[in-house]
Length: 70
Image (cartoon, rainbow, N blue to C red):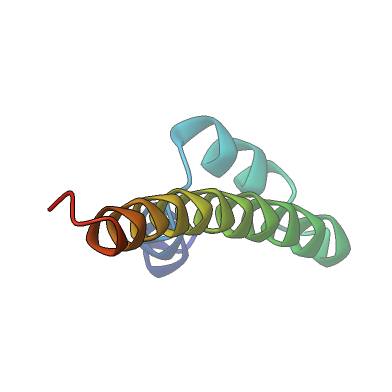
């Protein structure tokens, strides 16, 4: 596997197991695309979970200020 591809996968948060699987299917472009798309979905789901947490905190701060509970 090209070292640039490996480093890009690491930078994208892929673990060693994912990288090994990706390397084993490197000649099957469709399978590689499916793996990358699945990893992207997982990352996006994590972002959405964290966004919901931030929204909850923002709401709590808003309510505390509204009721004068600073």
